[in-house]
Image 1 (cartoon, rainbow, N blue to C red):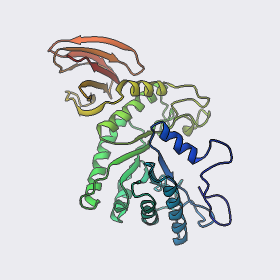
Image 2 (cartoon, rainbow, N blue to C red):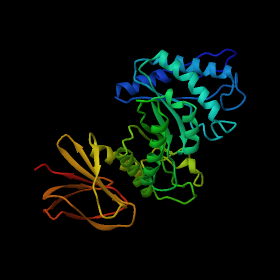
Image 3 (cartoon, helix red, strand yellow):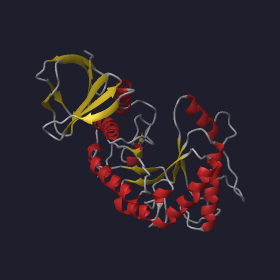
Image 4 (cartoon, helix red, strand yellow):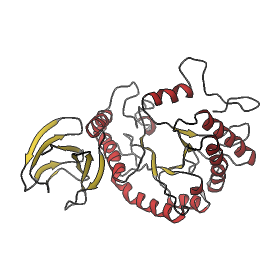
Length: 351
């Protein structure tokens, strides 16, 4: 970040021991965690608004980005340029397309100059605003970045993102430089207990949406999925921003935390291969594989009901969303089981 001074200087370490971005970066790398850093925002030394609109402001921001990239060069950092520039909360004034694209054009080459292997993603939009994104693509944004980051927030269930990803991929293919493939990154997405339409979600609903978000993103080949938020930001019962967490404000695990833990523990190392064709398109059964191991993640977006999975004779273990296990077996006629909006995992025993 830029410190408060007459002239810009850069602070990556704090006075307190074991704090600051140096310590954070090294701590993540030691734990095998790849870091994604967001480069934002502006400084009042050069800009009067929360945005970058001047040549001088762009030059200063680009120098900041280059300095950060050089400091952490070789550490496999992903750099995201700004946060949600398509809304006035984070970029004023709107519309922001022209100035934002100029900022990326100024900063991206400087990042690559400092760290040629760095990955750059943008524009980190609030939701998936197709018109805004297309305007950026028309202005050459895709020339400067390695991935398209979006924040697919919505009041509807996670499965509704599939059609949005399809449309976004079409736009990327239309405007990307020839031969350049850019993945979509889900840089921030979550569900508060107070939904966008003010409806209240139960903690169990939040938990199921978390798991289904990760599963759908895996199915859609989204390489990075970040859930917002780790813990609740406050305790106001009527403030939406206070209830996105997987843990309460005082660090008590919520059902979403337990569901995330079971999901990661159960499906660690698996990758989604395909979606099983079922009669009702509201029912989901995703094939997963890990070497020779096979599994299914199964749920529905409608009410609880029975289905028949077209499987050859076998046996396995069903793990529910919160980790309860049950042994099952079935014949060549398939496996009948009751599914609900809470995902379950069928771990198929090897023959």
